[in-house]
Length: 349
Image 1 (tube, one colour):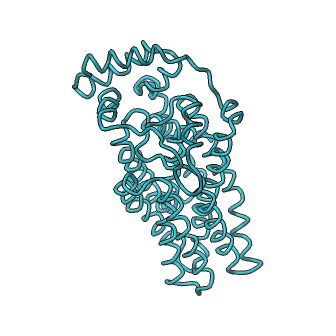
Image 2: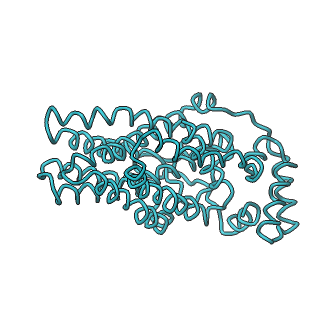
Image 3: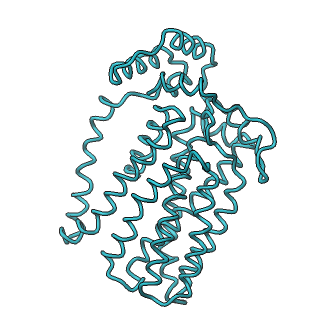
C-alpha cells in the first residue's frame, strides 16, 4: 500500500505539472522506462539473491529516498489554487521559472492570479463525488475497468510458470513488453484517444487469451500470452491516465488512489483464478478472457478526455461526464484551444 501511494501521488503530480500537449509523453515514458526496467531486473535479482527476505530488503531500502521528496518536489499549483492558496501557487510557478530558466509573461501571470483569486475556495472530497450521480457512475465504471486490467495483468504474471517455459525466462519476456507497449502508447494516445486505447487493446487481449486457452502449452501459448500482455500493458496505462483526467483537481489524488486500490483488490482474486487450472487446465485463461471482454465493454460508457482541460471542480467534472453517452458525444464540451495550451504550458512547465 505504501508503494502504491507513492506511485500514484507522484503520477498525479506529473500530470498536474505539465500541460495537455506533453501530458501523455511525460506520464507514459516515465512508466515505460522505470517501471518496465524494474520488471526486467526483478526476476534475475530474485534468482541472484536467492532468499525472499533479502529480496524484500533489496527492493524496500531504495524507498528511503522518499524522505527527500517533501523538500525537493513542489506541491501542485493546480491543487493549491483549487484550495484558495493562490500565493503558494504563485511561489511554485516562480520556482518552475528558475528551474526551466524561463519567464512567465506578466499578463499571463496576472490573469492566473485574478482567475485563481476569483475561484471559490473548495473543500470538495470523495464524499461529494459519490453524492453526484454522473461522477458516482463514472467512478464505479472506472473501478470495474481498472479491476479488469489489474486482474488480467496480475493473472498473466502469475501464470508465467504454468505456460510450459522456465519461469524466469517467461516472466522476463512478458515484462519486456512493458517498454515497447507504453512507448507506442505515448505515440498514439493523443491521436486515438483514451477510450479507444483502453477498451480496444483490452478486448483484443481478451480474444488472444481465449485463443490461448485452447492451444497446447509451449511456444504458441507463450507467444499469445506475450501479445496479450503487450496489449493489456497499453490498456492498463491508458486507464491510469484516463481516470486522472476524469477526476476534478480537489479529489484527483484520492479518487485515483481509490481506483488504483480497487485494482489491488482484483489481484487478491487472481491467485484463485490461476488455481482454477486444477479444475480444468484452460479455465484460468477462459476467466481472464471473459473479464477482458466485460471490462472493455463497460469502459465504452465513459467519456473521452483527449485534449480536454482536466476539471478543476466537481461541477466541471459533472459537465464532462454528463455530456457523453455510450454512443459518443451528445453536446459540446469545452476543449482547450492552442492559446490555452500555451498559457498552461507557460504556467506549469
